[in-house]
Image (cartoon, rainbow, N blue to C red; front, side):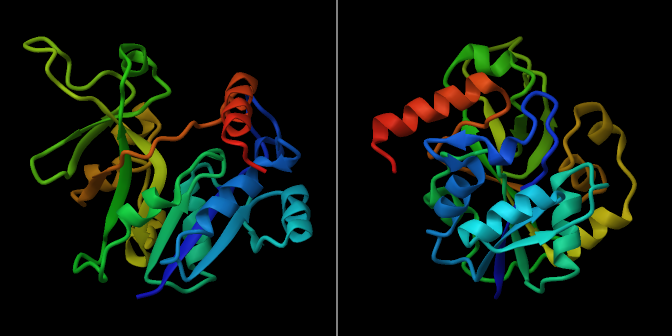
Length: 244
């Protein structure tokens, strides 16, 4: 079983242009993500998938393996699919390039011991949310699962709605997701689904078409960098950790 780690790194960002190259204690954000992911011993390879020559040049200067992909992809999954057509593997592990605090132990959690029997295998790491404000924040995409930890729905709204009880632990999907080659091919060949369009979450394309998406709960939490404020938070955390 061959597992390839892929870090999607798109240059354009509405709130933080050039986000993958944002400076964090003297290194671009992408370097921190790559360094953490490279500590996952079960990966057979690791590559940055970008759409911009500036990112490609920085990766070359830092010794990070990278490939150029189309600028037309509108989702990370579509970008990873392109990688799957050029670099062969059984499973492709998505590691978002805007989570510099990622813990390699979270990557270990989602990787199966052997190749799954389901040819359309898809899984995503989730984190529990500790604060009520996080539950109502639309940027946190909440998940509802069945008893087998299969995702029923992903929504930016609080799901389930706490009408009958407040005794519920809300979870959000993270940027760590795993796809088989056949699942990626299905994704690329299928049109955007209705709920996917509404929620802007590409995993819903699998769920709406009857494919299982497994939720893997992780205690290792991170911070997604979407704004300059998020960047400051990450810098302060790394300073406190004495990271270099």
